[in-house]
Length: 373
Image: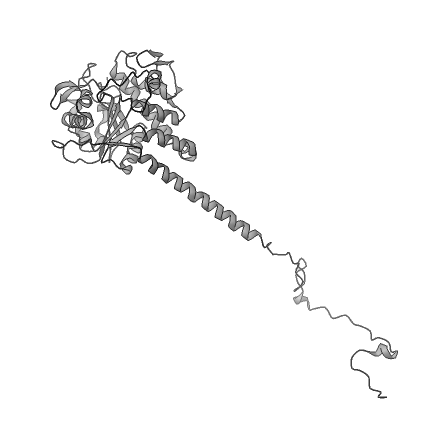
């Protein structure tokens, strides 16, 4: 038998003691891992590792957030496009005899006594009476100019005596009854020399719907007011007014000693409150209010057929600016309570608007149209 032994540590098979095992020498001090870290190659499986499903969850959340933002943007764009299709259009541009183009932009804002869109029950509730046939008349006539200087909102009292082409000298609101928007524009251009760039008309029902869609507006009558013709019944002091009350407040004149001169001031107050509420961030952030305002405004507006969406947007901004401390709001310069335009001050103010020099209007702009002092 061969005395050869297998190679390796097999001495125990032959009764020999197992060799003493020695512990490996520790690594040099410089090779030691920091005391708070495990040795190299022995890191815990969880150290620095991210559970495999977390990146997917983050991506899913980002994707959902992106979809929601995109959907909101589409909603904000789609609503005005939808509303734009509901706005009525009218040819308000006279064929001839118009002033040349002027710097800045001038809007003619008309509040007509049209009952379009109102049921007979609503007409009774709002104290508007029936249509009475024909085109109706204009309870509100204002020029809004915007340009290089402060925006200016100027009321033209409906009882102002002016020359109406083809009809002689009579009240300015008769122009609308005689020839609609086109004759009204021509009448204003003839008597002021100011070129009207854009025409915007709101009926009775439109004002009510817009105010209600905004949740009401603030009015601040300086005295108790009660008028059976307009249906107005309010106490003095600042208060929230719904659409019905806002309409009555803007129509009332019999409660005032100065009649139409005070009424145009109330009309500007209502418009300013509407503009203030409409530009609130809440109008955009609340989808129900956003749709309601767009629906109420578009369903009651009539605009010139050459007025585009950008021009309409600029109108809203200029209206808000004119009623803030940055702009001017006033009545056309008057010489007396009989609503006769001042022969000196009125042409001077018209000239500043024509030249887009509204920063020079100064004391010509007063709430009631009468000279200061």
